[in-house]
Every structure is written in C-alpha cells, then in structure tokens.
Image (cartoon, rainbow, N blue to C red; front, side, top):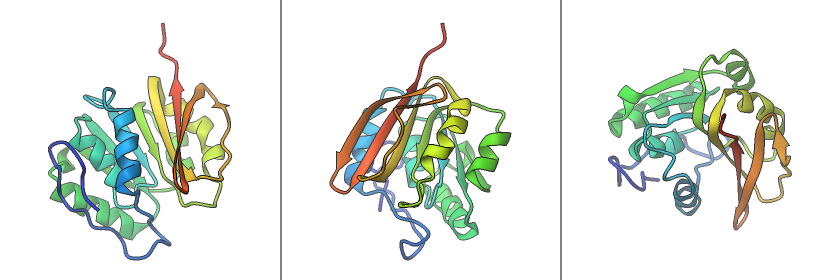
Length: 182
C-alpha cells in the first residue's frame, strides 16, 4: 500500500496485519475516490473516520488538504496512523485521536470540507452515523463512504444528499454532498 499522488507520492504505508481490524482500500478505489474530489482538496479540512492505517487521510494531505483529523477506536491502528503520518511528512497537519465515531461526532465543534468513512464492512454503521456526519460537514462539503457493493445507504441524511454511487467490483463508494450556504 502506498500514497498515489502529491507530495508523499510513492511512500509506502504500514498497516496492521489481517483484515479483522483494518481492510485497506485498494489503489484502484482510492484513485477513483480522490479523482472525484481533486478540485476540492487544496486547503480542505478533512476527517478520516475509521482511519485504520490512515491511508485515506494521508492521501488527502498529500494532495493539498490543509489538515486532517484521523479517528479510530483501536489503539494499535492509532499507532500505525501516527507512524504513517510521520513517514509521509504530514504529521504537522494531522490530529490523531483514539475514540468511537458517534461519540467524537456528537462532541465535535469543528466542521470539515471532506469526510472519509471506511468502517468495517457488514456492520451497517454508516446509516446511523450520517446525520451526525451531516452536522460536522461544512456547507459545500463532501462525504465519501466506502462499503461493500450490497450495502444500502439512504438517499439523504440530515443536510447531506446522495450525489452519486460508484461501483468497483465488490466495493461501492457513495458520494454525499451538503449544499453551499447562500
């Protein structure tokens, strides 16, 4: 697994062994995700929920995001995220937090231009979190959710509206957008 583009391009990232804790996004899916938001990344505030190895947030930082908050509830995953951020020279623009997603979202006082959600598959976590994610998404913001192809997500949640669903083999990426304020 490596960073695809930007200032950290080509840097290899470490991940926890096995797929029970982390399931790295394939390069094909990651490239497609970031191609779809490439013009929104410069200067963006990013939230990487269920960070795992941190690869999605690091990719965003490498491509010009201003800062990224990484969240995971596994201590070992958090250690890996910190190592990967340091290795890619993006640690100074990172905040790595240990915690549960719904608790973090309910307490968050900041807003994000891009939210990346790649939770464990087959747990149906995303539908319950989308209203809270909507609350922390900035006007004009984008939320990308990676799921198994068979997942069923709502057409809207809070102020988020489903803009597009992409499919890549057994993986689906759902793009939600929040309207810009007047």
